[in-house]
Length: 222
Image (cartoon, rainbow, N blue to C red; front, top):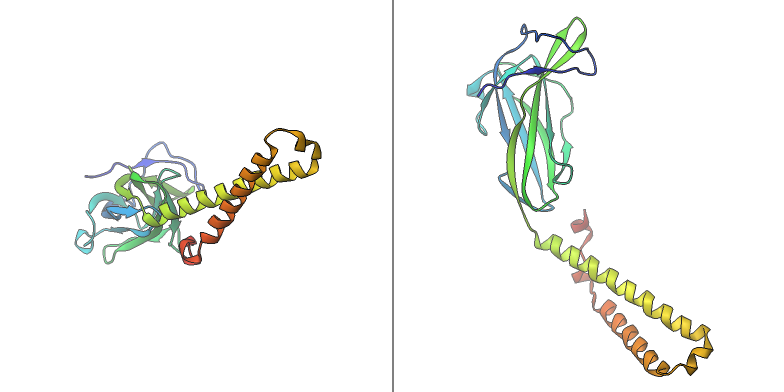
């Protein structure tokens, strides 16, 4: 389908009341995203734009208005993906002899069905400067699945923090009893001390059992 361009004000020029068509021609765009990912995994998203349909052999090409210079944006909901642009130049040239490519690296951050949105804009030079003609956005749905690696990391972090919290609690209680000798007259003090000692020994055993194999490596953390 052909997307209708709407004129917006860019950082270089004021908005126009009517859209100048002198530099806009028919072209094609193809958005290539993974169909599914696992949370924490990284994948590459590419967008191909050309004036020639025959040159685009990836994705599902759709008609779009193009200009000699174009810019393409990739975005999503803030907590769905971490998006890193791999494009050296913001504006790129589009012609009928080659395919212009925009590339991003995306990392899945949320389980479920998430959308990646692509917004293309034709750059036109006017007497007032550069104007962006932004077209209707194109979206692709990506299914994000769970990851055993990330689940293990979360479990390890929770267990480690719980052990530290118990250690602080037990150590604080033992310190309190040591600082206040009058607590010796409280009934059940010995039984309470035995419980504290058992907690201390249990925590020490759990920390000792956290072998290096059960902890995420440096590569996994990156």
